Length: 397
Image 1 (spheres, rainbow, N blue to C red):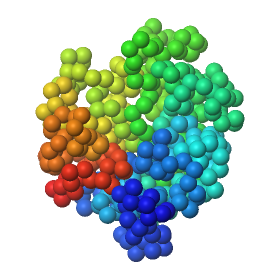
Image 2 (cartoon, rainbow, N blue to C red):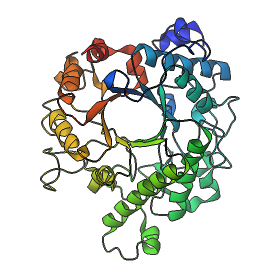
Image 3 (spheres, rainbow, N blue to C red):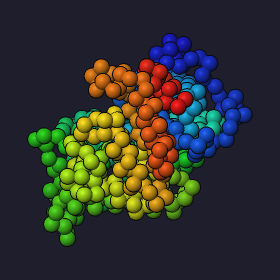
Image 4 (cartoon, rainbow, N blue to C red):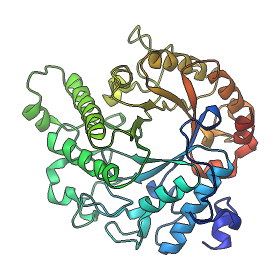
């Protein structure tokens, strides 16, 4: 990586090292210093890594190593690296093409193995490597001809839905569910990852005037369901529970974690819900019964994205931490809180985010709940920039 590229990322040339040079660092630990501290490294549309498509293999590798060194400097214990951003892969997958974010051309071999490198280099630095996947996203457009020639959707056009101008795999098809599980399980089998990590996208987020066109799938596979919403939740439950069982059968030491949108249901909708008043409800809008996944023990950890400030009127961070602590209590499922570091200092956000102590208050509040084990910060670019010094203050708290 050039000095200019490192500077643009907020990194330093001295941050780049090899696994051999880092070999003397502490062994990885899930709860180093008593708390889990993670950061997401997003590859979708080159948000964090690589900084742009088409870098050489050596430049890409140097950027990745620099991010891992940054994680060590910021006292993280884990990184969530997005390895399957859009039904494509940051490893040589037999199921889906090479990721477009690497070379700019989906399916083109980048000349190295980013996931293999990430695992080795993270572990050499005492970091856990959580392989972050999006189960169903296919593309940010609706044109199958723009996908790699060997993409599964080119071979099986009936596997895809278009919603709001974007393509996703149809969650109502059992063959799709099996395929996406196979694709992700390939990374679990072949690499020494510490966890498989999913984000918040299941059925698509609602958009006014848009419908999920799954009539044919419901007619074929919805037998026994009079309520299509219940059928959709059943499909998502199967995706999660089957994936959990398959991971435990293949590599029981690999954790399975999910980072859902932070609101399950509002109390006004369901007495078991949180005292929140507006916004998406994952149960009703994404057909994702996130509370059940914790209570059933299908997942090993949950990272609800609590991307609001303390006192936010419709979705108070303090109320949601309290609610999720109650959900996790007695389940054995670890609870970490997803933090909106990207909002800090943003003038478009509520005034609370212009206070560098807001994240400090998050950490201090979360520590008052026995089931909260740490925090994960979105995302790497902001971890590098440390807006208003808020991350440093939170880590020092």
